Structure formats: structure tokens, C-alpha cells
Length: 336
Image (cartoon, rainbow, N blue to C red; front, side, top):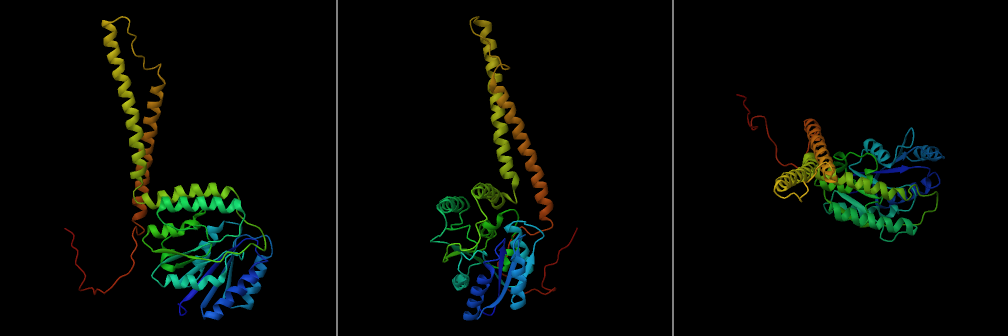
């Protein structure tokens, strides 16, 4: 592992007080274990002196690089910018708040050496307020159960990736917390290691209660992307068919009741004919049919978009290749 370049991408938002100490700790680990290191700080629209600190660190240490966003685009965008700029075969992410201990880096490298492609950190003992810890535990349990990627801490900012895994994942919104899930859906092997979590000393948390709600919405998106990204009609069409069939069954039932009661009313004057237009059920059935047709239509459009996109990008992932082929050995294809 020591012969490979390790790129550490660190998004920072108003973390000027933490950056020098973080750099010092990372450098100490690299010196102790002989890592070939690249440190990329991404200033995500800070309003404090974070960029000045990054510039100073870059002047003092040739291993340090920096990117400055024009404004705050969010953590996923900052990570994407960092991933695109670094050169390492192995890429680690680390939060700038000093809560995750850089001394744990060797644990990630050792786990990756076992044959995994993504290693996620697990803050087994957290030093955060209860209103952050317990919602996070519920969220992690829910993500693990629904995605079948069993990690104790999907939100941990300390993760290690092989470059191949990152090259097949597109980050946007707040999808950074689901990178292991997205990587697993592409066939990459995911593991986790325990990290030493420390209390926050400088600054304040950038996340509030709204993060839990946004996380649930992002989880729904991830479930759709990982399950139906190449076959959206299987989901949208299924919903549309069920809705349409329920509406049609209801309409057939009411039509049958109208015919039967009309016939019976001819024989028995005390029977009141079934009146369709006075029933609320008719409106529910009509709404179900309309909604069902809309889902089917959106499904066809999604299939068209997926087909068009698949012509320009691979919808598969190759782990490794062995052997070689010369032009003479390649099979010939004939037209006509």
C-alpha cells in the first residue's frame, strides 16, 4: 500500500481553526508509515479564513493542494470536484472538523488490502449530542435494511475508495452518504472499520434536524436508482397497471350493478336502481385510471431516456480482465 499514491479529499466549510491541526495529524501518520500522500482541501464557499489557511498549508507542504468553490455547492459537489482533481489510485475522504482521527488511516488500508473496494468508517462510540446520535442510528438501520448494504454508519465522512469505484459513480445533491450503496449496486465490495470519534472542538455542526428528512428522500431516490435505473418501467409501469386495473375493476363493478338493478327494478318495483353518478366510487375509479395512465406514460418516457443514455455509456461494470487478443484472433462480424 505504501507504494500507491493515497489522495485524501477534505471538504471544508468554515473550518479555518481545524485545518492546521488536521494537516499536522495527517502528515504525522504519513511520515510514520511512509505513505505517498496527496492532500486535497476543497473550500466549499467558506466565509471565514479557510482559504487563506489552505493557501498557507500548500506553500509549506508540497503534498497539499486546494480547490476553492465559487459558492457553497454542498458536500457532494465538493467531493466530486476533489475526486476529479486528485491523482491517487486510492482516494480517502475525511471531514475537516477533527472528529474522525487520521491515525485510523492504516485500518482502512489494511481492510482494503483484504480485497475490498470501498471501506467505510464506523463511529462505534460517538461524541455527539443525543438528538444527532439517535436519528442517525434509525437512519443507518433503515438504509441497511432497505439497500442490503449492512453498515453501522452510512453517514461517516471517513471512507476509502479504489479509484475504479469512484469512476463509476456520479455524485449530486446529497448522495455522498450513499456512495457505498451505489458502489455495491455496481458490484464493488464494501466493508467497514471502526474509527476513533472525538468531540468537536472548533466550529459547529453544519447539519440540523432537516438532514434526517432529506436523508429519507435521498434514500428513496437511491432505492429507485439501484433497483430500476436500467428498467424504470418495471416500477412506474407496475404502479400504473395496478392503479389502472383497480379503476377499471371498480368501473366494471358499478356498470354491472347498474345493469342488474335495472333488470330487477323491472320485476320488483320496490328495488331502487343503482345510480352510478351519485356514487363517490366513480370519481375514485376515474382518478385511479387517469393516474395509472400517467404512470405508464412517464414509464415509457423514462425507458426512452434510459435507452438513449445507455447508447453513450456502459450499464455494466468489469472487475478484471485476463489474456489478450490480436486483431487476427478477434471474431469477424459480417453484415448481410
